[in-house]
Length: 126
Image (cartoon, rainbow, N blue to C red; front, side, top):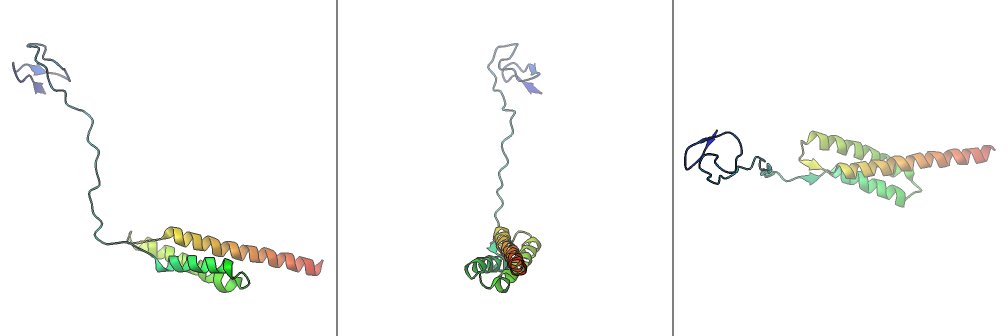
């Protein structure tokens, strides 16, 4: 409960003027200030080496397309291991996007290799 600074009259709400003496009153802003995150991360984060390896293997799979399983399988394995390491690190290790991209490249290459193998077998048989 507020009071008028001049006459001491009790004020009920957000009046702009005192009803007794007419004194202009300061209206308090009812909106709270936004909370700012002032915490500083003391430990630096770094990209997962397994996620980086997954991406490199995934890219190399598409560059050297004639040896699909030799590079696609390590891309998939490194991608899954990298994602596990990122989850276990509690925010210290980043790079989930790299791991996902490496996984996507590896899985896509294996899928297309299997489709091409099925087409080749169908052409030989038929």
